[in-house]
Image (cartoon, rainbow, N blue to C red):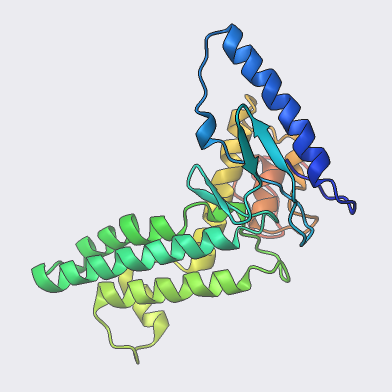
Length: 244
């Protein structure tokens, strides 16, 4: 449950959730549905620094609100929805996979193309998982440190593919490795995410009103996709086939 107010409402929220849980368990008993009450978790999403003190009553269990990030479908969700813990966890997992693959290639030997495919499938995909949820291409959005960290990882992948020295120009390394810059990868994932949202609305080519300006008034790559329904247009240009 999300709350952005200023008053302490932890106990009030816990009481509301407890009543909802009781109604859910009554419905489950009537319909012969079983829930694993011991695995129940509670999250309190708020911008406030102070953590809630209440607990949610689930049958015979008192479930405290999680004080740390909670994993849900592979995404680490923190109380303020910054996804910093998620990014840190994915980067740690990607670095671990990269070290394993580099040890394998050093022992067995692999051609550059096969090495690039393995690194993209195992390392790059792991690092970028869920990145479309926190990435914002606007200046001052507060995600530059994460972008820089991803770009450093891409540079390491490029050197692993080509076998170049650390003193080699990064532009040459990235060009010869066939890898894309971190910003291009992040923007592409954001565009694909928006297109999936458009398709799930059941109206291909029509952008829901609530999604058109979800990231602000700036006309970046993500906003152009929202405005044109997925058609590719250059920055500042018009979509093909549109009238003045």
